[in-house]
Each structure stands twice: as C-alpha cells, then as structure tokens.
Image (cartoon, rainbow, N blue to C red):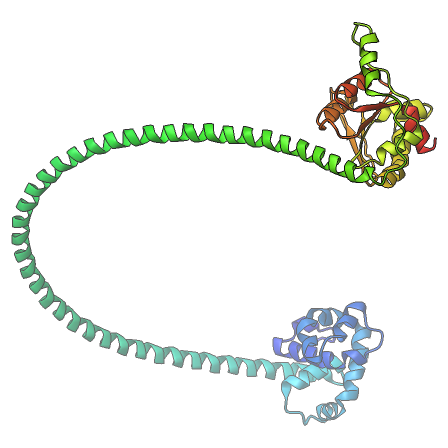
Amino acid sequence: MSETVRLQELPVAVRTRVLTLVADVLPDVPQLPAALRKVAGFAPARRARLGGQAITAGLADEDLRARIAHQVSVRRQDELVALRDGTMHDALEAAALDWLVRPQGWTRRLDTSVSQVEEHAAQQQEVVAQAKEERWQQRAEQAEAELRDLRASYRQQVEGYKAEVSQLRRKLGEARAKRRDVDEETLAAAHAAEEARAAAEVALAARDKEVRRLHAEVERLEAEARQGRRGGRAEKEQATARTRVLLDTILDATAGLRRELALPPATSSPGERVEESLAAPDVPGPRAVPDVGPALLEQYLALPRARLVVDGYNVSMGAWSGSSLEAQRTRLLTAMAPLVARTGAETTVVFDGADADTRPPTSQPRGVKVLFSPKGVIADEVIGQLVEAEPRGRVVLVVSDDREVQARCQRAGARAVASASLVGLLGG
C-alpha cells in the first residue's frame, strides 16, 4: 500500500477507530487549528461523533497528523510495542495505529491488517445475513400457521352466517307481508294527515302575517321610544350639568363671601343702570369694557369656581409681537401655569387654527386646557360657544381685545377683560 494512503481509502471500521484514537488525545495536541480547538472542547464521548469531519480534514495535514501521532504514541506505548513485535491480535487496532503513528514497516502491516478487517467484516455481514434469513424463515412459517388457523376459523364463521341468512330470509318474507297491510293503513292515514296539514298551513300563514305586522309595529314604537329617550336624556343631562355648575358656584360664593375681605367696593347703584339705559343712544352696540386691572383680575379669579377663557393669539400678539407664533404660545402658557395654580380658576386658552391642516405640538401646563379651533372655524367662534355653554350667574372672565368677542361674551353674561390686564398680572 502506498505511503500516501488517505484516511478516506481505509475501511469504515478502521476510519472510525482512527477518529476515536485522535479524539482521545486531541486536547493534549499543541497548535490545533481553530476548527479542532472547538472540537477539543467537547466531551470525550462527543468528539469523534460530532467532530468527525473536522478531524478527518485536519489529518490531511502531515504536520498536524505527526503531532497527533506523537500524543497517541505516548498513551499507547504498550500497543505499539506489541505492534512492532507482531504479537498484536486485534487487526482493527493494528491498522488504526499503523496508519496514524506510522512506525517502521507500517505499510506492509497495514495491508495485512486491512485485509483481515475486511475479511472479518465480510464474515460478520455473512453471519448477519444468515441470521436475517433464519428470522425471515421463522416468520414465514409462523405466518403460514396463522393463515391456516384463520382459514379454518373463517370457514366456521361462513357456515354460521349461511344459517343466519336463511333465518333472516324467512323473517323478511313475513315482514313483507305485514308491511303490505301496514302500507294500506298508512296510505289512508297519510290522506287524512295531508288534509289536516293543508288546513294548518292556511292558519299558520294567517298567524305569521299577523305576527310580522305586530313585530313591525313593535319595532317602530321601540325606535320612537329610543329616540325620545335619547333626546330627553341629552336635554336633561345638559340642563342638570348647567344647573349643577351654577348651584356649586352659588354655594361656593356664599361660603367664600363670609371670608373674602379683598372684594372691590361697589362703584355703582342699581339706579345708575336704569339711568345709563335711558341715556344710551337707540343704536345698539357693544358695551364698553370695564377697566379691570391686574389686581382686580386676580381677585375675580380667586372667587369660587371662577372660569377664565383666553383668546390666545390676541393676547400673545399684543404682548410679544416680535416673536414667532410658537414662541408666543410657549411664553403665554408657561406664564399662565403659576397664575392658575395660585387662583385655582378653571382656565382654557383658545388658539386660532382655522387655516392650519395640522395642530402644532403643545405642552399643556397643569390646570390649563389648550384648544385649537377646527379647520375653517376661527377662535372667536369657539370662545363664544364656551361662554354661552356656561350658566348665567357663574363668574366667567374672557380676556380679548377683539370688540366682537367682547360684545358676544357680555351678551352671554361673561365679563370682558383687556389683554393688558392679563399680561400685567403675568408679569410682562
């Protein structure tokens, strides 16, 4: 055999034994390639099974094979001595050691060992084949015996079935005779049942028609009742909410007036309103906005359940016209937070969004509600709706310099406040 014999050319049993020998010493071999270093980390029982391909590829390197052979020689000294002396009787072990370690005369011994291994393998295959043939022969004989038993059993069952069929045929003839008599009676009963069913269908059709009419009437009445309940409930809830807010305002104001000493003094008498109405021109117009300074505004906001509505851009453009709209919004909302926290007034700031398709991101301070008017609707309309929704008698303050907004809010019972008063109260 050539000295360049490859591991793949050896019989399967010899290759498996070589892989086992290499796997045992793999952790002790220096300078292993990366693939074999990973295999060396496996458990001893798994190295040859999981790393067989990597070991086979590595043994193609003569230098690596020589390092591995050295480690095998250290561990298998007794086997190598017996191999050289010719006293080793295990041809499989001898072939694996000769190919891996390659001592003197290994090629000659390898040919002999491989021949013995192949001969032994052929004998094993022949024994296995003979054993398989014997097992199949036994199974065939057993199957033939079972088949004979089944045939005998089936013959007995067939005889029994024949006797049973004869008895059933006799009973079938008797049953057919009885069935003819029953058929005649059934036919007469069927005619009577058909007449009764026709009469019942007529009555059922009339009843179903009446039931459908009643169902339609019930559904119509239920729909009218639901619509009436929804309308009544919505009106009742709206009226209840307005009344409750007004009642809470009156109760809080009554309790607060006993403790409140900073309220502004009365500047007019009931008769002055009559005099002003008589002296006013006939042409209707908005009432003048009373002068509400920052101090008086804060006193109003401190009243029980006070309501503050701010025309956002109207105030911010008058105070900080040199800044961008975003900077104006941020400055106004930031300044509103301490005021709302100090007075506790329910506060809403309305910005105009009629010409905008999207709403800019806005951080809402605690206690301050921020609204943008819908597309196509100006902020003045939203402010008017907010004020008109409040019950008359509640303290409602609207901060805006827009004359139309002031007039509409005054008509709804709110108090209009100039933007300068709020800006002064906010400190700037």
